[in-house]
Amino acid sequence: MKDLVLTGFMGTGKSTVARILGERLQRETVDTDEEIEHRAGKSTVEIFAASGEEAFRALEREVLAALGTGQGRVIATGGGALLGDANRALVKGSAVVCLTASPEALEDRLAGFRDRPLLRHGEVHELLALREEAYAHFPQIDTTERDPDEVADEVARVANLPLARIHFPSDASSTIVMEDGGAGRVGEILRDHDIRGRVLLVTDENVDTLGWRFVAADSLRGAGLDVHVSVLAAGEDQKSLEVLGDLYTDCLRAGLERADTVVALGGGVIGDLAGMLAATYMRGIRLVSLPTTLLAQVDAAIGGKTAIDVDGVKNIAGAFHPAELIVLDTSLLSTLPPPLLSDGMAEVVKIAMMRSRSLVEHLEDLAGVEEMLERPDLMWTAARLKTDIIRLDPYERGDRGLLNFGHTVGHALEAAAHYDRSHGHCVASGMAAEVAVTAGASSDVAYRLGALLQRFDLPATLPGIDAGAACAAALHDKKRLDGIVRVAVPVQVGQGRMMTLRPDLLEEGVRIAVGSAS
Image 1 (tube, rainbow, N blue to C red):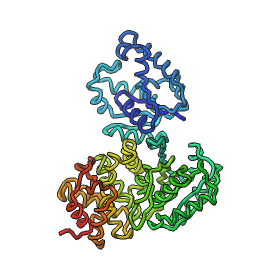
Image 2 (tube, rainbow, N blue to C red):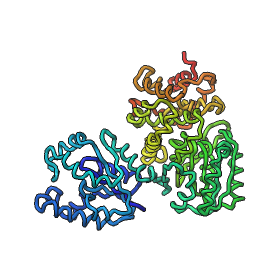
Image 3 (cartoon, rainbow, N blue to C red):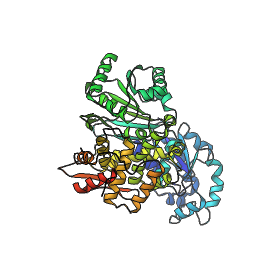
Image 4 (cartoon, one colour):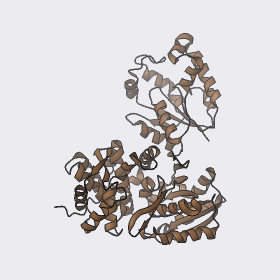
């Protein structure tokens, strides 16, 4: 496994970004300056004062040589560590990314650190000029006026690293890979993650018509896997005990055993159903997810939830069964019609309003939903924000509840409409309604949420749904506890929390959502 090495001028954020990536990817993080200080028993300042720069550089070479390569670590180097050919040769085979920033930004960041050995007042420009040629050997990422998490997102993309790795208390884990063209390489990706043997590829007629089933199956077979295919009808009604039973039969006929794999190729319905299959067949076999919709890529495929519907109640029977590997291929989205893209934007807006003012601002800069296809970085950020929550609360005992913004009312609307309204539309109306009864319809949160919904062709209300049926469904939400319903709402743009909602306010929210509030 390749190491990731971060280089660049002092103050560009190498150590901070390395720690973020190490935590996300569950990899060891190394700071070469800290290693030098540990080896010398002195601070960097003391080494320079006592022995000079030459002695420090000799220690730097020793540390780089001792680290070696190929252990999958995230390494933050000092600003001058990779200036020479000899040291650059020591990290050959690693993914190296150079962080940069404007001279003005660096002056501001370093203003409180005048004890840095090579930095005297006014020398930032001079040192940058001297190092420019050396830094140019590597791909560069500008960190000026950027959040460290966003910088980490871009480093991961540039270095072709996974988005994140989520560990679950059950010892299961999910590795999330974002790769344009990943459907055509899914076999190689599985092989790289040591997934072999028999595969049941579960998809639906919509995906099959677009030809993605053949792309994925050919790739899997090309990697030496024994592939069997189940093509289902499209639609929420496929998430039933009857269809699940048919899939068990398909597994038996294909000869799947405990070490074999279910691959889910489709949107949220296929992800839920195939996940439930993998969770329960032989008490659990491997699951790989290749989501084909924006909604699934930024939300539904991530987190390990699987489910089927029973007697019209959505997701009432399910299990936590994390996909071992989740491949997010943004090129699959190019075939989606605008309404399906719009539907997925509901989940992007949700996570932005709850967790990231910066992402809200980026979304506000887009002209409309189709521009999202030109910004895979925003999809990456939305997906990563969800993984950040799940890593801390994999089984929804705390912060993971924040991901339910809009879903309490939204799921009630879906049920009352007998699932004839899209999930994204119901969640959009649910978000608007839940904000209206908590923050208030005239709040900044409500105003900016409403503007985003309009921008991405998402409805704030869904007239035509029976208000009584929707209220009854909301009051029987599966997330209630002792008769009390807790909802997740943004109290400020980008900052959400859980809130208890009285039954009368919940009913008012539902009536707002269907356009029948008094």
